[in-house]
Length: 170
Image (cartoon, rainbow, N blue to C red; front, side, top):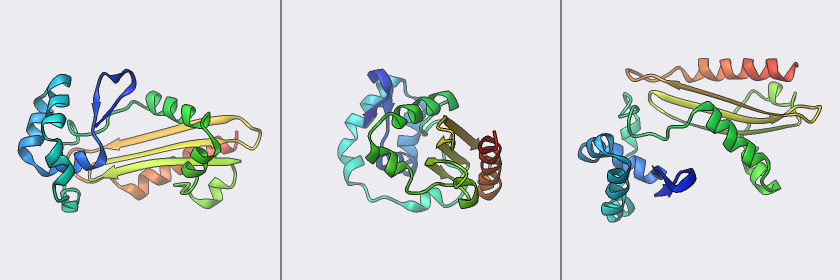
């Protein structure tokens, strides 16, 4: 378990999310729990979280508990994280730049493109840290959530790509 800024909210690891979403009783307990109860749930089940066999098919169908068992962050919060990563060392920025998450024709219009995305059925998050050719830095974030079905990843990536192309043309 990690802690969010200020240590207030328990933030699950990827492994913990797999286990939580794969166990209906844990999913229900997490969804109904207060911050302290969620923290206790992670601590009390630490061995299970560390040793459970992960089932990737949990993420193969319809959305699972996307309204409760997720990493929730506003676009402003994500932009803040990207800004802090911008100020980090060169290694951190190099890691973010491994996969631009963007059409190469658009990416080459920037001096730097860092990307962090993630998704599962019903959730897609695309976050970019870009540096314009004139040296100005920008964060572009986008999230699509759909409780009833998977989101159209190609459509959303296209929309984000278009937004970045417009930004590059400023």
